[in-house]
Image (cartoon, rainbow, N blue to C red; front, side, top):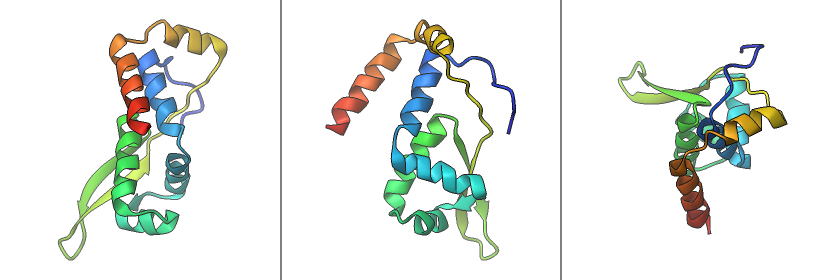
Length: 120
């Protein structure tokens, strides 16, 4: 994992990352994947979650760039999707947030409102 923060995130990137981590299930998924990469079925058993729900959370984490999934073939020819945490490091300070806020697009703002309405 990098020890130095990457370039300051845009407002859209920061919102996507914070939104993805703003769910306890997704935080537990990241925590489990820090230990080792894992395939969906084993990860679902490990954290006690159904595969469909796990897939939804993994898609959100992947869209935020926090995890990456790769499809691999097992010895028996079965396709298995493995996920692992991507290296990331964000430094959150009031100044970083202020710079990021200045770059938020209207699209991101509409997406955020849609997600909140969908959660109701």
